[in-house]
Length: 117
Image 1 (cartoon, helix red, strand yellow):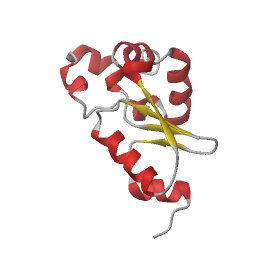
Image 2 (spheres, rainbow, N blue to C red):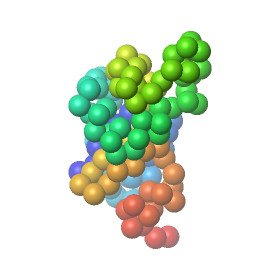
Image 3 (cartoon, one colour):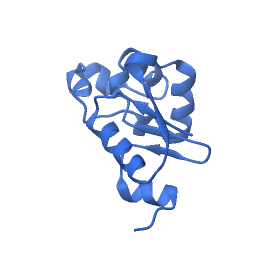
Image 4 (cartoon, rainbow, N blue to C red):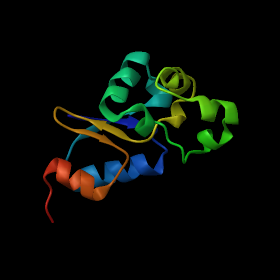
């Protein structure tokens, strides 16, 4: 079973679920707002994707951060920032037994799941 981490109202999360359903792949949503997020999870996904890939610099939350925070984000303080501002986390994060994806890219998903047209 796949777990999709994100926010249910996020358009990219919705696209991901539509794609997974279209390809008969079951997944459950872990909504950051409903279920929360913890340090251990963020440490884990930081190790997988790198902290730079985890921060969504195209988000409204990012744009609303003060310049000092934006300029001083690094591997030592990123997890605390993401705990305080979970909407900064790039969405979705899809994790399964052998699947580790961040964001939504149809070609990347097709390759990861062995889907051919």
